Amino acid sequence: MRKLILHYHLFKNAGSSIDEILKGSFGDSWTSFDKDTASAKILPAEMRAFIDENPQVRAVSSHQVMPPLPQGDFEVFPIVFLRHPLDRVRSAYLFEWKKQLGLTVPKGSFADYVREKLDSCSRGPIANYQVFQLSNTACEGEKPAHDSDTQKRLVRAQTFLAELPFFGLVERFQESLERMHFYLKYHFPDLKVVNRQVNTTQDTGKHIEERLLEVRQQLGEALYGELIDRNRQDLELYNFACKHFASVVPQDV
Image (cartoon, rainbow, N blue to C red; front, side, top):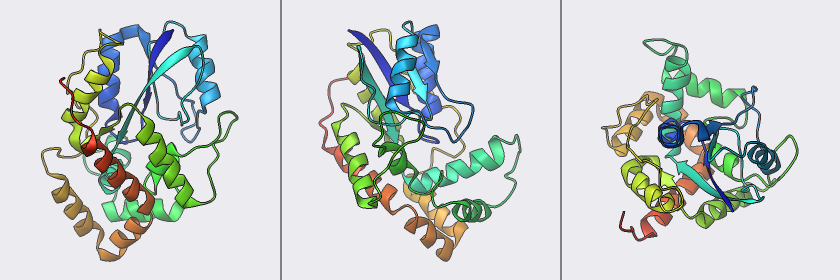
C-alpha cells in the first residue's frame, strides 16, 4: 500500500521548519496543497482526491486541511504540532504585522493587534484556533462542520490528538523531532530530520514562562484576561497535549 506523510501545518506552529525537512528529504515528491483563498478549508474527501491525482507525491503539507484523516488506497502518516496558545498569539502578531509586511518594526503595538483580532470575529487565528482546526466533523463538502457544544469540540480535538501515533510540541521542538524521526524512519528511510527552524519571529532562546510574562505585561491585565477567556479551550487542549506527550516513554531514536 502507498505510504504518504500528511503535515497539518497549523499557522505559527513551527510548520515552516517541518516543511523544510520534508522538502529537503523528498524533493519533488513533497508538495503543498492550499487554496488561493486564505480562509478556505480542505476536508478529507478533497485531500483524498488530491492524493489520488498525484501518485508521485510522498509528503503533503497544508495549512487548510482538517481532520479526520483522509481514507483511501494509501496509508497516511500525519504530522501535527501544538503550541501554547498565548505564545502563538505573539508569534502571529510579529508575523502578520511585521514580517509579512516586510517591515523592520510592527505596524502597531501587540495590544493593538490583539484588540483588532478579538473585535473582528468570534473566532480567528488567536481565539481557540487549534481546537477549531482539529475538531471538524465533516468529511466532504466546501465547509467544515463543528459541534455547537464547545466542550464537545474540545473533546473531539483531544481524541484526535490522543489517537495519533505521534504529535509534537513547539516548546519541546528538538525532542519532538526525535520522536517524529523514530515514528517515520522505518516507513520513510530517506527522511532527514534536522533541527532547522525557519520563519521564526521570536527569541526562541527565552523560556516559555518568560515569553508568557512578556505577553501579560505588554497587553495589560484587562486585555490579557480577555485573551485568556477567548482561548480557554486551546489552553485545555495544550495542557492535555503536554500531559499526553509526557506520558509517552521516549524510544531509542
